Length: 168
Image (tube, rainbow, N blue to C red; front, side, top):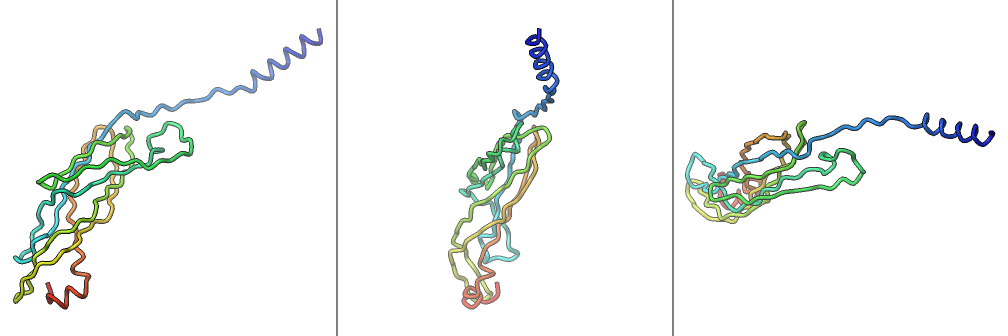
């Protein structure tokens, strides 16, 4: 009889220690599309300066894997998808997302081009590096984001260029 009472108390203690857990479901099957155009002012001979579409530039979209996880296990992995701009300077990247949206970093690789400069008396050509800062955007399931990147060149910050070509 003592065994039955002790066993019954043990089972009651186990059952009372169990708690009901709530589960939150997150829709991670959605996608969003991040599209854009990459532009840069390559021809500096004519004024006003005009930006033109740049082909062959790598565009990368990055996000943290834990932003898509239902339960974070502490293993946060940086994920990325990339595309190269076409002849119109355009790219299109499909990314996974959730209904509430997640934050993405968009990075554009630096690139070099031969650029013609004119300071009013002299025209010259020089290899110039173009770059862009990373941009952050939030995308929700089913959205299409359209972005434009007008890249800056490093020519204006190079004192050797200013001496060689004068004020541009």
